[in-house]
Every structure is written in structure tokens, then in C-alpha cells.
Amino acid sequence: KNQVAIVTGASRGIGKAIALKFAEQGTKLALIGSSEEIHQTGKELREKGFHHIETFQVDVANEEQMNDMVAKTLEKFGQIDILVNNAGIGFFKPVEETTVDEWKKVFEVNVQGVFIGAKAVLPHMKARKSGTIITISSDVGRYTIPNGSAYTATKYAVQGFSGSLAQEVREYGIRVGTINPGMVDTYFANSVQGLPEKQDWMKAEDIADAVIYMASAPKHMLIDEIVLHPLIQNYPI
Ligand code: NJP
Image 1 (cartoon, protein in one colour):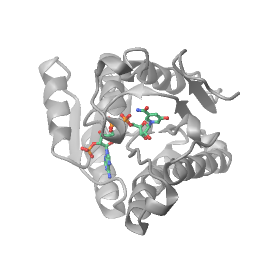
Image 2 (image 1 turned 45 degrees about the vertical axis):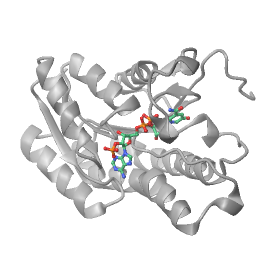
Image 3 (image 1 turned 135 degrees about the vertical axis):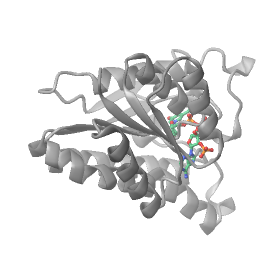
Image 4 (image 1 turned 180 degrees about the vertical axis):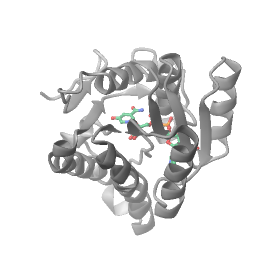
């Protein structure tokens, strides 16, 4: 209640589900997407009766755009309690078929975007001695899969970044955690949400529930990591 959250990648999929759950809790929202579709998310939420919603067509990998978005969010809402680094791209190809430009792009969004997002909110969170930074990483931030070298490498990087940052900022009352899902039915990796063959996969709402749980833990507590899978997924433990 009365909190302010930034959610990146809220045009569709998991980020859009996170936005709806936060809105239902009365959390004010700054929603980020790189395409115009982000404004549609804002429109749909306002039509549902949620009015404290700002949308920004911003690339998470662009520091200037992200800093500007944070400044405008502070101007509008006065504080930032939660950052959810959710924007990410799924990219799966054998190494020899992966171009350097593709490699750079997936790292820019999945890793540089997470770094820039966190860096942009830290001065404010440090000054308030409070804040929660949640990154949607992946189960493949913990184990490897074929044809996933670039994507898997980005998620391992995000785990390293988040773990290190968590230790760096806990003395300022800032909590940093990751959510590591297996297969979720979204538009990920050029898929379409709602395909019949994905009916047993997790839903975007399942991941949004985990975000709400992590963000609303008592202030003295840090949930470092939540790992979630659909029952049908054979996950190496
Ligand atoms: O994917 P999708 P998910 N700047 O494609 C936005 C992780 N994950 O919801 O830019 C700003 O439906 C894009 O919006 P737009 C995954 O790695 C998933 O599944 O306007 N935003 C859209 O809203 C990722 O980190 C699965 O086109 C940018 C959103 O990102 C997170 O979950 C499994 C952007 C992508 O929506 C959400 O992915 C797993 C940019 N540069 C981890 N580029 C899974 N689905 O199975 C993209 O382990 N976006």
C-alpha cells in the first residue's frame, strides 16, 4: 500500500502480470518497455480503474533514458520503493550461428539493463535507507542448456551481479533478490502467450505472485532467491 514500483518490460508477458498485481495492491507504477506497446499496458490498467500509472517508452540498456525515467518517476510519485528488472530477451542458437551483434544485444538488454536499472535507483534508495531490487533472472542462471550459451551466460551474469550488489547495499536497508523461473507461457523467444502446447507451463501470474511475495517480506528479511518450475519440467537439482 502507498508504495511506488518501477517494472521494466511491462508491455506484455511476466512484466505486464507483475504490473497488474502491484496495481491491485494499490502500488503506484512506472512501467517501462522499449516499444509503444507499453502505453497500451497503461491504458488497460487505467481502464481497470488504476490511475497511478506512468508509462515510459525507454530502452533499459540506455543509461540516459533510464536516469530520465527515474527522475520523472520521483517528480511524479516522490519515492521509489521497488525496482523490478524484468525486461529480457530470449535468444537460443548454437554458438557458431550466433553473431557478435546478437551476442551484444542479448547482453545489453539482459545484463547491462539490470546494471543500469539498479544504478539509476540506488542514490534515492540509499538516501532513504530503504528499497527492494528484484531481478527476473532464470533457472538457467543456475545450470546450462544446449543452444543457450548467450542467454545462459547473461543469466549467470545477472546472478553474479545481484548477489554482489545484495552484499554491497544491505547496510543501507536495500534488499536485492532474484526470481528464477523455468518455463513460463509468455511471448518469450518469439513465442505467443496462450498456445495450447504450453498449457502446463507456468503462467505469467505465477511469477508475479513470487514478485509480490519477495517485495512484501518484512523489512528485516531478505528473500535472496525464488526458484519456480512447472511440474512437467525436468529440472536438474
Ligand atoms: O518475455 P516477453 P517474458 N527495454 O517476451 C520488454 C525471463 N524469463 O515476459 O520492449 C525495455 O513476453 C518487452 O517489451 P517491449 C526473461 O529472461 C522468462 O517471458 O515493449 N523493455 C516485453 O515487455 C525476462 O527477463 C522465461 O517489446 C524491453 C518484455 O521485455 C523476463 O522473464 C523463463 C527491452 C519481454 O516480454 C520476462 O520475459 C525464464 C528493452 N531493451 C526467464 N527488450 C519464460 N518465459 O519461459 C524487451 O527462465 N523488453
